[in-house]
Length: 104
Image 1 (cartoon, rainbow, N blue to C red):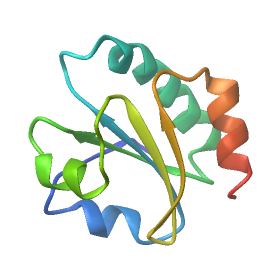
Image 2: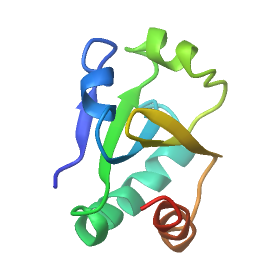
Image 3: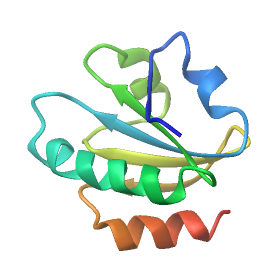
Image 4: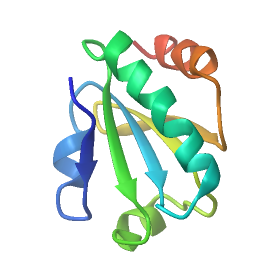
């Protein structure tokens, strides 16, 4: 499954069903650039189990504020529309895969 870019308008539709990893990021954020290839790898390895959604905090401040995102990257794990996990900062792929598998 391809990584989806969500906006304030599309966010709820993208996160209501199944297991979803949401990456709150910005183009100027160094650690966000570091985690992008990790998310691409996760998508290719776990894309059938988890949907990955990216939210640019500069363009979608309403959604970022709703979930109290203060620093980026912030990764939220949703299960059927509910937040079940939160990770702030860069994480290696193995750590993210482990956290996701706990909610699968």
